[in-house]
Amino acid sequence: MQIKKFTFNPVQENTFVVFDETNECVIIDAGCYFENERQELDRFISEKQLKPVRLINTHCHFDHIMGVTHCRAKYHLQFETHPDEAILVEQAAEHGDLFAIPVEPIDAPDAFLKEGDRITFGNSFLEVIEAPGHSPGGVVFFNPEQKILIAGDVLFYGSIGRTDLPGGSFEKLTDNIKTKLLILPTETVVYCGHGPETTIGFEKKNNPFLT
Image 1: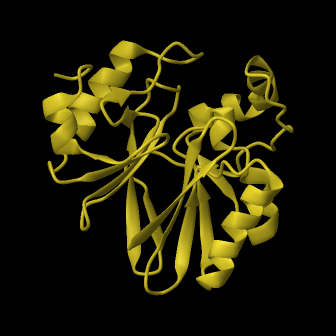
Image 2: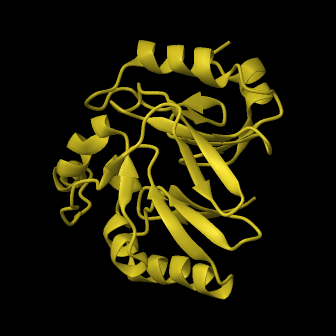
């Protein structure tokens, strides 16, 4: 399983394409906003001869769904997220206005993810773990074989997701990180929704919000 990271849009959000030797792939947190960003994503998929089979989101703050409409249309995919995130999709344009970033309305999710679901593609899979607190229905995606975690805005290098947005809760977020993420193998590589990668082991020892 390989992971390609793109950093998109004015909020510098990380979008991921995860693929394996079969060339099937999943697009996670499609945040491509500008035309050149959409072209960059499409070019990578085309040059690698990948076949997108799932369009999934860790959560649905506006910066993580700016490319959803494009990916839905271009690759004929259903948009999947946790049911508690549907309200954020509905309010995406409104939230964009708060940051002075125009966001086109985005159609409601087509399908929903829940704890324990398996996202399968090619010979690979990602397990869905619910970890709300940054957003009302935030999830993370974990592959236990390669010890890879796509964490969205739940956990960052030396930090955690902000909890002052609607549906946020500091207590809920830190509890979920401690009880669901920090129990994963210490060598697990964490791919964050913003900024660089980290590891579970590093955050257990060094994250000031968790130690």
